[in-house]
Length: 417
Image (cartoon, rainbow, N blue to C red; front, side):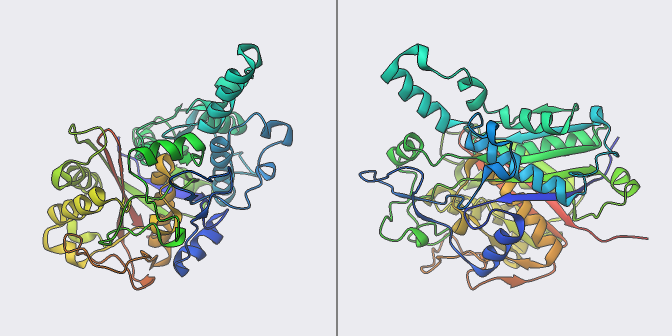
């Protein structure tokens, strides 16, 4: 069984917008969402900036009495799911949904870390009796998936993927396979993360993974630039409604794009560093193309993992050259992390939504903050602004600590009579 899987809904919360429309508009304009941290006082921290979701009101999506019982990472994930379901036409009318064939897979690399930090501080200060009874269900990495499932009475495949910065992409690939193999007809899938917290910022700063450009936060994330010095922490959520084509057609849904390929590999190399030459990334992209029954020259755009770290960007560039040969010179390889920051486990979901929009609208967002070329990063990164280009097939890459690699293939939707 190999059923076609289409995208009928999108939801997005990023540092540049609290929904798809505002985020997409800001991305095309090349706006940075990175600024001084507001969620806690960063004075004295080695890194004092991040890509925070600004103006988010969880009460718009969750009953107000439940907001305090829900970690921010889950709040963002629920909000993105509601947006996606609304666009799919399933938020208000669920009559076409069979609960047992409707599932949820949403990834998160870390889960409710803000809750963990808060409750640990309470434990140390006031003792074990003062730890909240909601502590465990608030911080576990699968609770966003569980809450979305409960909200929509989705009784099909239901779990969370945890593979660091590949979590959201793994979730979408797993949901895609569930529909392909006949386990479900409709899936809510993507990634969510809220890691702008004291411990998370401190931990990534301690390992020298973060940019330390405190004097210029908006220009700190500079993928593929020779002066890049680390990634910028971001937060957010990106969710898709995936649907079996026949099911979508039977209810008259508007198809946005088609998910046609999924490649997943492991580096088996190092806990944080990518394999030399991006060997695992090469195999992930090749696997996505095989899954899509596509040739390298069919691809017009890659939403790169593009973290702005010295190791990732050079190895991802090398991987693209290996996987695509001479055609690599014809590709646009963009990094929207230059504007959103790196949303960790949400990145695969956020960037799958963006890649879907590229295929739908034929416009590629720029990679901003590029000023000094790196001779080892010499592809077209859309550094001069948004590019109008029909994209019939695109890849979205996500790579995570531990050597996890995922590539998703998304095709422009053309209705055939």
